[in-house]
Image (cartoon, rainbow, N blue to C red; front, side, top):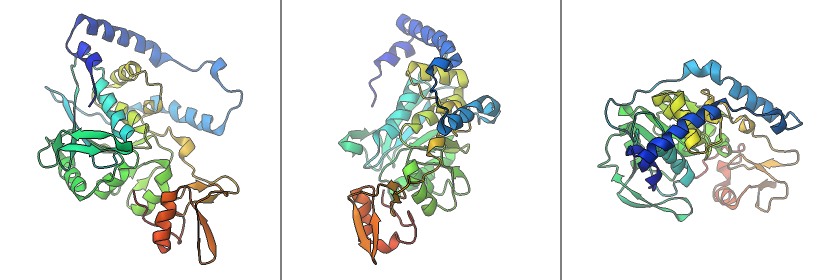
Length: 337
């Protein structure tokens, strides 16, 4: 995972590396002070822009709430990426890249990354990518950070996370990896988020978890969850900040040429446009996933004289297999993931 020669130059203390990191440190001072000029702004102030601006404006006021983590006195912070079939590539590769590229002055390779699965060997991720697991659940070393992307999951994964989490600094999910994390019970009585398309189903499946809609990430101290897909990058940058401070996270984001700014708000409330999942006028809600469905959707089923429309074929197939599980209210059944 991760060809890393560009980081090797820096981490091995070469002259090239010292020049590169010096440039990163000086350039990020400008990056941190960057603001949007009047010429870049839209002529129309939208509700989405206003909410986003308000969320980001709370960053300075909320900074004192950042829950610090302590890196080890010696060595790197071990990070376990937990995989099973169907693992969504960006959910794990985004955080992997952040931890791999973390720029911490005076610290070489602050994070040590490895993959864990039920068995060592290839795991088929999303779109057919093959990832070779470094360890099995039986022989994996104890991590300080556990990353759970969206994936098929299973009893073995759930058992390993339950076993490893108490000794970890942080167990984090990305996207619908929140379903796997919630199954362990580690989110009970706490707040979490997930992909906006799964808000309805998550709330139904885990009533003991306080679902936060419209959040880029939710940090509960020793457990955290990111919203959909790219949100994992923001949560990972937030974790870098918790260990090594704001400047280290700024340096890392600049090095990665990452322009997203959701991680700059410690509250995580930077996904406001996804907070309300209401269908446009004339549209319906998919009874399986709860997402808006166009009135002319070609995926249609009938039950007891009523017509149901779906956003995709897989939702229609799940409904047709057990209509009673989904007819009580939109998103009321147990959608397969």
